Image (cartoon, rainbow, N blue to C red):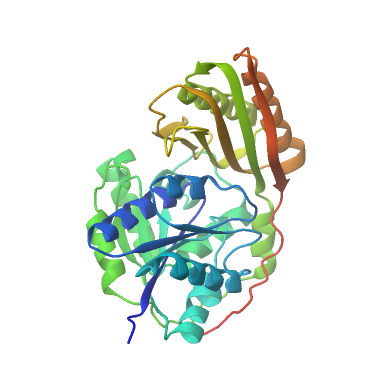
Length: 372
């Protein structure tokens, strides 16, 4: 009899560091001898996450056009495709960062309908601690509007494992304050402290994922109208750009310049950034990759991967999520920023191969089970 594959879903709001954590988990499981398949998810095509995970050699399936809850059949199909290709022992799925109600609409249906094929791990929800301190009212600072924070709160409410990521950014006192508030508000969840960047605390969390199964608590109450309104306040933009020139350039510096230009423009528009992420991959240099992230207005863009060499041509993938009008703000800012930065690179030309900007539609789950 074939052993069940393990299904692990790692949620969390935009900018929480899910992709980096998933990569570390995939590497950890691979080192233990497990075959790992990854499933990414977005409202549109052209994902930075897919490019980054694929560059590390893991098989990846991308589900676009809606959240896992609304594309449940596509999620099952993606697992099937990965099984045909590599027969993974473990599937790690990263849902859209603005989605919630994942246990009722994804985990419980998967276990009930495909329980012979999968064992389902507890739902982990990652948080950026700076964002969490503000959303929970523990510190001052720019935050989202109440309808967006409603979605954020519901993500934490359904979590079985709340994972405080980026703990290297906090003092011990601030971390203790955050932990106390999370334990008070969400007493059913088990708390973990990690830094996906440094590796701190990862093993304890990984062991918890491996050693327990999804629980059976009744699903939370959720107002889908308010959920939809909150998600729709977030503008979405995905963009893919081809670049080429006669002389080599420093691709890392190009990405930094573009991020800085977008950052400054969005601050002027008073548009709160949820997540800006970019990859730049050279056309003819294997899996070399530059990766940049910006997760708040009052933060600086950070490079998590840098290109080893200068480039003569490449593909830029840009994903931007912010509380702003996608047409009047995000589209305009990105278009103007690319054109402006390209002026610094004479002899280089660019072509926008794909660009979409929109607000997410109302979530309409394929299945929703009120009880496990």
